[in-house]
Image (tube, rainbow, N blue to C red; front, side, top):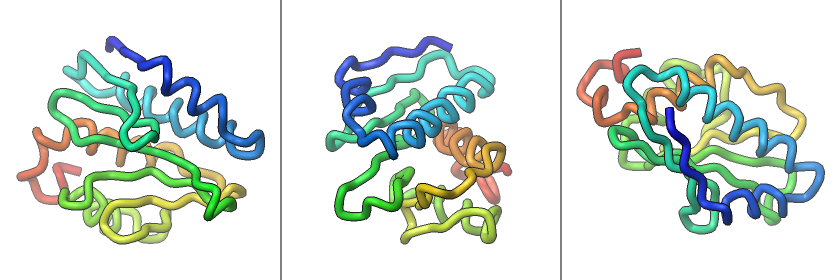
Length: 139
């Protein structure tokens, strides 16, 4: 897998408060790991959308993440709200993640992230346009 990174994305990570930076870098690491485990995923673009780190693939739906000052005790991963992604994640992992609407997985700063489950969600997002017609996205 070839990763192309917008240098401004790295600046965003560097500018998170110390208490948040490691959490956000861990989310980034999980996205990159998930992408590397997807067959036929040749290119991953790491860029900014709305000033937030975002990950794009040819056959996928955008995955974004961010921490916001107005909710300092949490950070989040965002998915396209009109997709079937978060509704599917809610069915697959109802007791694993905290969801907000049909676009967000919320993490508290002191949460231990269930890495395998989150990577599964990210993989479904990065391959969304190949699996969106399958029941539970082929999960």
